[in-house]
Image (cartoon, rainbow, N blue to C red; front, side):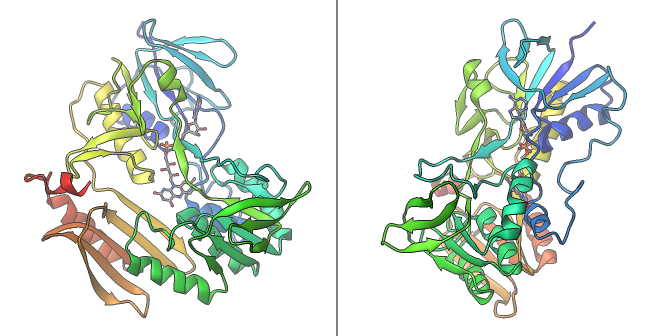
Length: 398
Ligand SMILES: Cc1cc2nc3c(=O)[nH]c(=O)nc-3n(C[C@H](O)[C@H](O)[C@H](O)COP(=O)(O)OP(=O)(O)OC[C@H]3O[C@@H](n4cnc5c(N)ncnc54)[C@H](O)[C@@H]3O)c2cc1C
């Protein structure tokens, strides 16, 4: 009898891979192992649920449909942490010591919230936002909080700011860079969202260094490098995520900024595949190795991984896309803009309905839209039609 296909991680990528195996007609055993750290998804829905305008139930977790209803052919084990992989013996060990053999292994272990060495980070009232457990933990404190401080002006920080401001909290976002979402969008987009947040009463403290969080047992404030004290009874640490690669590293798989896979989602070790946030992969389209944190990537790369496990040879080279909802503004991003040398604005910026195109020379690299979903879809189509870079221009942009 063939050993099962094992999937580590019951998030977006893991579930899509299992679904795809079945959709492609695989009828052998599939076992998915998840440690219970269910991701809070999407960000907008997760933070929105904190406002209690939604109940949050069933909103975040990708549906497994009928996939796991007929054990033992398909078996979903939640609250099961995988401790190690033995590639030579083709088996894994669970944290309780049980060993399970595999025919193929898919690692879909995602990311965890970045931790920073910061005095006061363990005080009550200080949170990260990654899993449903985080959402549950934040909810009660947020309901009672008056002053909310957010460390980090990226997507999660700014979405959380919008929700907290909507609840009437006094909100301060503290960001080390000179503008919000600086790493992924142009100044025009940052400026638009900064204006929007300020109009909703949010204070933005840009180019600020945080010295420490203050308080005895519960957090009472944030001490900034310039000597300012910001009162806070809830602090959200929204300073990014890191790929979960420990299992892969200990098993001797190649790991860089994520588990290294090729265009077929194959790791450096035979019969072990990886997909989703935890991977770095070669992008022919952008001429470099990339790691993405997005639902699009988790789902599309998982489909490729499932195909590869079944012997297919379809390469993965996506047009990445992402979204972020803040107040009534829907930001949608198609493509990767890094390396652009000019932008073009189309539409009604002052009315909050526009597209910003990023170019390198004449080449369209990416398009950000605000409240313009049709333009976003057209941008995805246009970007998909531009094939891998032929003259090295994109590589230079990396
Ligand atoms: C708050 C928040 C909001 C987001 N909102 C958006 C959004 O609006 N749009 C968007 O495109 N992207 C969004 N993202 C990013 C998106 O969540 C991820 O890109 C996506 O979930 C990645 O899927 P994944 O399957 O790779 O990883 P995950 O969904 O994180 O799943 C990985 C799973 O593996 C489990 N695991 C890890 N190690 C082990 C182990 N040893 N044993 C067993 N299980 C293990 C983890 O607990 C986790 O459940 C958001 C992320 C966060 C944190």
